[in-house]
Image 1 (cartoon, one colour):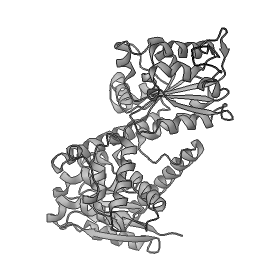
Image 2 (spheres, helix red, strand yellow):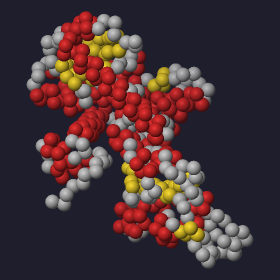
Image 3 (cartoon, rainbow, N blue to C red):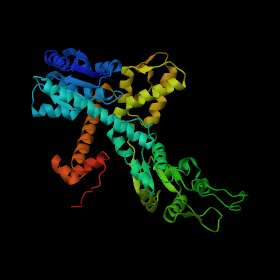
Image 4 (cartoon, one colour):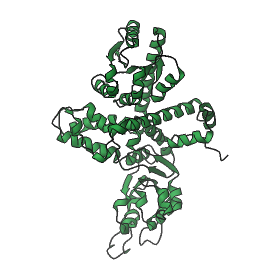
Length: 469
């Protein structure tokens, strides 16, 4: 049986709790645990997150114990963030000095899975340890199974915001309604569209992808709907068009907001009547296909500006996926970074390389306006230019204006921790109350509408909807 690796991080050198806890663990299951005990001196506490990142690069624990003291509370958010930035989720059991409600609430708020209060007894410590490890293993397995089921193993990420969206894909794929996928450039909209197609009844048919923004406005109708001979001067033969190429399958229209108004009219008819008229044709043609559209723009603004038809918007927006930007799921950056390092070292025929803690911190603190695609390019460039086995921080080249500074990184990490707590708390309440928003709101001691707004903020879905009262 594989031994469980335990990191015991004592942030209070005057506190003997770390030594006492280590003794309990060693006495309770000496052959089951591999324990790494790190004592942090008072002067080292402000830099403990950096030290933790360094530890994680050489020791990958299955669970961590954080022993907090009064002087270590200001770095709590950064510490939990540093632990979450590792390759896989790691549960944390916080050791607090007393059972004070505020102290316990604080460590749970920042991301602890459980807590302990001295004195320690095996009957209290070991069950908590085993439960945390087992729950994390089950969570990893469920995430892996979900991605394999959806054919999304290449979709790297474990953030709640991302998983909440991709979990919708099987239900969306089963029906024939139109789908609108919203998300910034580089968030994986086409990957999700392909997953919907290959899980759908149309999977045996073709998947035809077209970028509406890449086609000149005067050629869009011809490209989509084709033409008959004589439709225009140079039309000596007929052209099928992409709609007929997608017959029996899925037509994926990326950058749908770029579609000219006249093409929007014809697309609306295709969606409503399942028919279209090629240029120059006398009779309409029937169509059997599904349309999935995607946009990185705010279509509601386009509606107000008259650039996008309202009736088409409502026809497309039957089912919707909202893919979160990478800046809203910083915890996935290390996973993606390590994946791209492994991918490009193989493709480039290079020896195995890793990212230094400084390089990883730089990647995590960046806002990634270009999302996953930008991260991929940064990693590839760094691997090509670096001559070292461990990529240094100064070899990660980012726009200076967009790099988070040390002064604001605490606030950024705190905001991430708060968002993560809210997401986990809401999902747990909804699960406990079988998805009922009203009961969940009462359990949270919040107004029902305010609770629903929190759900909308984190794009957490439920069958229940807020009443108008």
